[in-house]
Image (cartoon, rainbow, N blue to C red; front, side, top):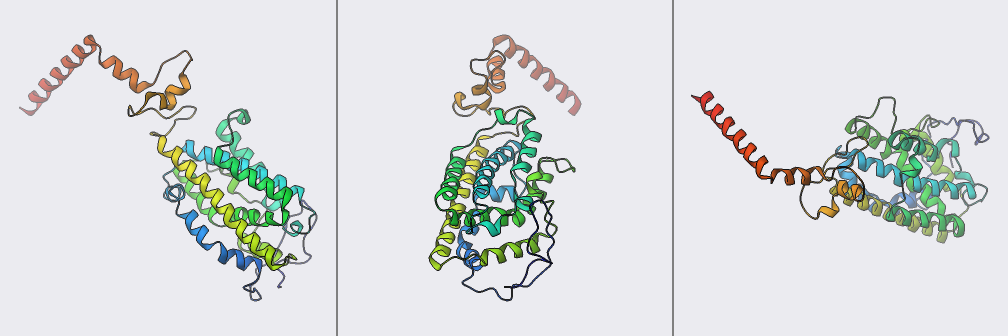
Length: 312
C-alpha cells in the first residue's frame, strides 16, 4: 500500500496533517475502498436523482428548507461523532479517527446560530426520518462498531466531494454572506487538499484488518446509509412542496388560499394567540364586505374611465 502521507503516519490530535498526492496503483478490487465504490454506485445515483438534490443543484431551494436540512445534518453528525468518539480506540475504526480534519458538529452549531440565533436549541427538533437515521447510527456504534466505517465513509467522503458543489450553490441561491456564514458545515479548514486527504482515508480503510464477510457487511451498511439519507431527502422534498412562498427572515410562508385553512402554516402558528390571522383569508373576508365592494367598484370605474380617456 503506497504511503499517502508525508513523513510520519499521523501526529497527535490537534496537529494538522500534511500529505502528498499519490497514485492508487496498488488498489485491488477486493480492497474495501473499491468494494464500497462499486457496491454503492447504484445507491449513489439514486441519491443524486432525488428531487430534493436535483432542485438544490439547480439553485431552487428555499431558505427555510435549507435551514431544516442543516438541522437534519446537525442531529445526524452529532450521533455519528458521538459513536466515532466512543470507538476511537477500537481497532475496527481507530485508523479512521480524524476529529480535527473531519468532524462537523461544531461547524453545524455555528450555522444553526446564524440561522436561528443564540437560542437555536429551543427552535429545532429532530424529524422522523432523521431520527431513524440517528437510531441506526447509535445501534451500529454500540453493537456493531465495525459497520461504523460505512457511515463515516458515506458522510465524510461525500462532504469532501459533492458537498463542495452544494456549498457554492447554496451561497449563491440563498444570497448568503461572502464571509461564509451559514455554510460552515462545508468548510474543512484543516484539510489542505481534499483529493489527497480522500486518498489517505481510503488507504486507511484498505489497511483495516477485516475478513471478507465483514467487508461485505460494511458495503451493505453503506447502502443502508444511502437509503436512510434518501428518506431524509424525501421528507425535505415533501416539506418543500408545502412552502408556497419563500419565508421571510423570522416569518413563515403565506397560505395561498387553496386547500384546508387549518393546514396553513401561518394560521396554525397563530391558533390560540392574539394577533392577525392568515393574510390571504383576512383579505378575502374584507373583500366580501358590501361597503368594500362598493368602493372597489367605484375604483374600477374610475380606472376604466381614465384608461378610455388615455386611449382617445
